[in-house]
Image 1 (cartoon, one colour):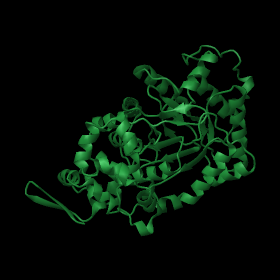
Image 2: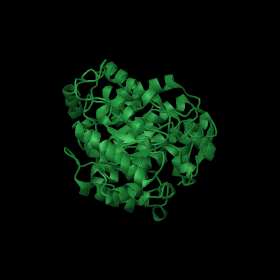
Image 3: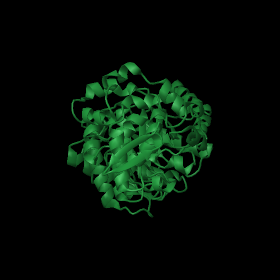
Image 4: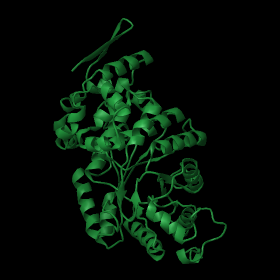
Length: 456
């Protein structure tokens, strides 16, 4: 299908749906690198106007990546529920934007989730200003649970990220203690291992399980190894709470990660069989990021934000506890500066929430990007207003293993204080029991000492 729009006497032509979506995308370096960005600001506006007039139902009859060649496309279309879609089936993309900003309420948005495809939500996001992205996301609440309940109104959770360049247990334990003392860790205590070695992964899982069990902390642990490594650890009897995996929005991207939909299903069943959750059974943790498909040469000419939204269909299939976009991690080739990172973070958050995902964002950038911590303060604050489920807690905001800049334990304290937010309720009760209700103790609380978690 060819799309045209006349603007100021010039006819702008878009050869197919993916070309229209790419041209309508706000400027970002990844689409320029792929050669699919609008050739000018005028062409971008023309594409956005054409997209606004497009019937929303078009996305059910025209796939941006062929059904026959891509299992993510098949997943999207085969699981679509037309009955859930019916309240908005008559709308154009522009009309859908108006509906979301107007009469849509939290109850109707929950009912709508199975009727939305990633391409629909990606399309409507391209017509939105930042305040629109925030306003719509703030209407969407998605909860999940394992040993605590995440995503409730008035709550902000934090992934405690105690990485070590050498996977040194003492370093990880020190960072974990630091984060717990500052109220972080209710989303997950999650380690990015320096290697994907099963023995190291098992050892780190054992250490985290001992800390959680000894102090009866209502949270979950995760070592963010490859899913096949985690499966080997499960088979070896490791105390696995959550199964982690990076995912993408095309079959080729996931194959580049060494995974398939069937493998993810196998891993979920293996984790569920362990029965380690106490208040819920969400056992998967997924990470995504705009640009991963282009990096894998598996984007099929589709813009990176639409591909990112398609990754959320993969995540949604496996009922995760946590999903987050590592928004600025891939680098300036894909999101050049703070302005592009801020926009992308808000897009990712809103699109994922509309699709029903318990979404967090790693508010981050690499050292060679045209961004700084002021940009991250802005995005962090905007996401807090938008109702983000969780953010990262990294010692000093500087991840010494992954070599990128994120958000610190103190950043989450700022956001909770500024917006009147609290951690997950079960974790709040634990903080109270441990004398950490203000999360800023001058001394270690009774019973929680360096010696007891292996620091001395």
